[in-house]
Image 1 (cartoon, rainbow, N blue to C red):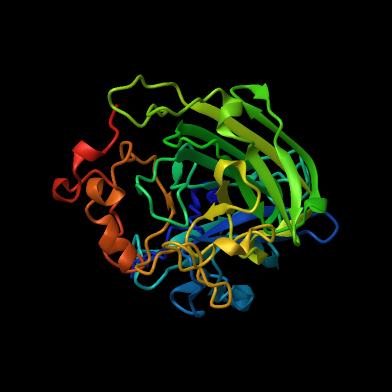
Image 2 (cartoon, helix red, strand yellow; image 1 turned 180 degrees about the horizontal axis):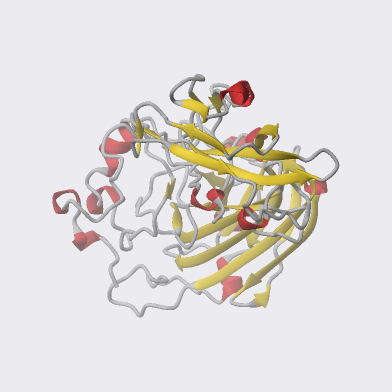
Length: 411
């Protein structure tokens, strides 16, 4: 199974969460083994996967070596950068026994060695000749595609939720638009982005306004070659535009387009006394004309999502610490409860760091209508005020003394 499948990318978190002190073990692997009939020599291609968010240094020696073939140790990497890397070591040898690379991450979990064995008898095939063997290639017949990176993870959903009364805190129930998401970013053999495919579940609209939903991507619109969008299995008119040097995809024009009517005190899936409606399935697929290195992007999936309040161009509500687009109206910044300061790169937070949008790595159970999020999730306020250091798991329904279910939509 492709090691990249287990990557969890949470690049745009609500605020920075304290990193775990323990490292996860770096895994080494064999990409392919090839035989040259003219020379009678074998060539092994090795790679690795570092699941940590930081580079890991493992010097040559007992923790990083070839067993029985130490003469090739100099070809092994000693700096292991985050993510999946292919063909980092290429070793040609006469086939006098298998090449066994043993790697141990000091202090890493699980403890022990990771072993990659290149044997002459292993039937490695690379049908599309992109340098990734079929067993590890999600697209073994397509040289332009090799891996899929899921965010938050394969078959898992994260949540983005918004409060639309910005720049005022308003009722601060954080349910004016609640979307679950799963991104599938398709990479080529060089870890460059070829496709961006995303699925959403619109679960709640606790707003009297017809808000729009969009995402800014850190590349220009001109680099998007193929694009299409759907709602509930039917084609939906999502629009692409340019904001400065970056592309903006408007995924929801306004919630009324989706048949969601709110007002007169009645909202959509935020009131325990009202019917619960099925969520709206929303998706898009996008192919880049020129692949972009994943590591070169300033942020990854779910990129830079935001709502347009009442469909009003320029009135954007983004995640905290995420910049507005070039089309945002700066007249709103620093008004009401907002302390956005473009020069200091402070975005969409109150003086106490409370945000107007949140990004959570699970499918979140959100507050009921007109219930402050701080009433339902008692650890939210100290978490936000500490910039994510305290109570990093505030969004869970446990422990019970940190949650008041009377203010949470559990229907």
